[in-house]
Structure formats: structure tokens, C-alpha cells
Length: 363
Image 1 (cartoon, helix red, strand yellow):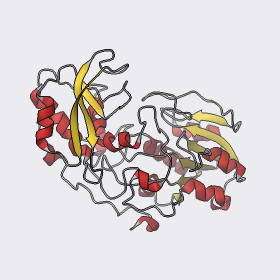
Image 2: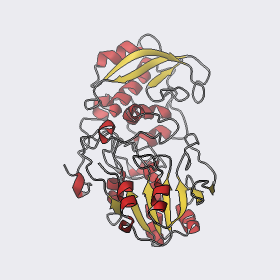
Image 3: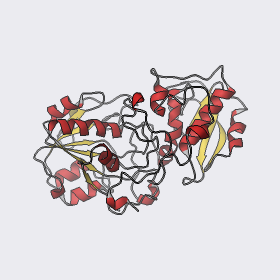
Image 4: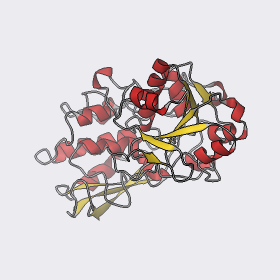
């Protein structure tokens, strides 16, 4: 299998441009771990500027933050940070006539890298700048989509177009759905049934709380806890796999186990977050152990966790974060209303995938 960055480094004639900008972060590497910026420069492409998303070009910033404009010490290129900046202004300042996107997504709508792509694709179209996506695998595979389509009334920085929470698409496929004229340097040899291990690629942390492929697998569901007063495990070594709160008691684990949710088991876990919610406070909860990734339904699992917390602990459970944050994560107001059977909120399968795909992935 060859990713888009490999193909471009081997054949730089695939992309035209006299002053090229590269949107990237630590995941922008070739399989031998050479950063894409270095590989493309060595191949003779005229890179002129690097652009960093949320968490920054180097990936040092926590969620909701970025780094500062700087100079990359390896390539000597200027670095412009994009998070919460005006895309048109940044792109004008870059002076780029061609913009390349090379960041590994994790297959979840409320992970912001695809929306950086979305915003800069729109800015590039407005300014007449070419836009190219170097495609990479969806680490959750490409056969399953879960969760509601985003209601445009709930568009926000964590979701700007009507796609499911677990969308089942690659960044290149998403870009084509946003703008069919975008250029995608496709992967060779990727199949929709591949999990991340099957790709043979090294896992590079896309952000500080996404340490392993296991984290990415559970994130479409337990990431929904970010909008509640349940800890999603930030401040531990197993974020999004550990969940808990000071008010959970001995009823929670048996209630989860009784559901017999597909592809996952639960064990009781106590942990003390070092930062974020309940920092420094021992909390009781559970750890998710995915036993069958093909059968596991992370969104359904996350909604059941929320449902049990709301119904077992109605006086303690609360929504948390900025105004309507949970609704923006979910993509509509159906989750925060009166408790409903999670099977009604996320039927399986919710959305078939395949109608947005570039030809070589239709298999």
C-alpha cells in the first residue's frame, strides 16, 4: 500500500505550483517516518510555507489550542498556525498558489482536522488557489458509518457539513464531497475493510490525547462524554478508554455489562485525572476493552454510557462545556432532550458508505 504523500514524493510532477503551502502536523510523514515537508522538498517541489492545525504544527498544544507562528528549524520554512484564524487572511499571507493537505484523520466528525481542510478548501476556491489532498487511510476502516448526520443548524468548529459521527471516509473522499474539483493524490492498495494494523503504517499521535489506534477506535463514542461532567479519561494514560465520575457507584458496571454491547467488554476502574475534569480527584468508572473491532459500535456504546449515567444518577449528571457543546458534538438536539432508547438514536447501520468514493477505493 502507498499513501498519497509517498506517491507525490516519488513523482513530484503530480502537483503543479510555483509557491506551495503544506497543511500538516506530526502525522504528515512517509512510512519510513521522513516528514512529508522534507520528502517533498527533497523531491524538488517548491514548498514555501507550512501551516499547522489545532494542536499546532508540532502537536504540542492541548485541545482547543495551537502553537504560535514560527520558523521550522528543519526546513527553514515559515510556519503559520490556522486554528481559529481567518482562512482567507492566512492563505493570502502565505502567498501560496497551491495548497497541499497532508494530515492523518481518525474517522470522527468532531475531530477538527477535516474542518481545517474544509475551511482552507473554501478559502482556496475563493482566492483561485489550487488545493491538493494527499490521501491516507481512515484508521477505523471504510465499511461502517455510525451516528446522525449533522443538522446544519448545529454547525460549529467540530462539524460543518452533514456527515455522520463515524463517517467511514478518507480525507480525500471527504474533500471530493465538499468540492468535486479538488485534486486528490489517491492511495494505492488501500481497501475499505482494512483496519489500521492492516495498513502497515506507523501510528503517529495526531494529538496529545490520541496515543494509540485503540484510542481512535473508541473516540467516536466516548468523545461524546466531553460535553458532560463525566471524565473521558483526559489526564490519564488511557484517554477515551477510561471513563468515570465521582458520583458513579456499584450500579454502573453491572448495568453496562447487562447490555451485552457488541465487540466490547467493561471492567471497573478507578483513576485520578492529572488535569481537566475532576483533576486530582479519585473517580470510579470503567475501562472499555474492545474484543472485536469489526463488531464494535463506538457511537452506540457511547450513547448507552450517557443514557445510563443520566437515568441512574439524574441528580448528579450534567451537561458540561461551552453553550450547546454536546449538541454540536452530536450534531442535533436529539441527544440532550428527554432520555431516549439509544437504539433509536443510532440505528445500525445508520448510513451506507460508498457514494462519495474515488474509483480505486470502490471495493
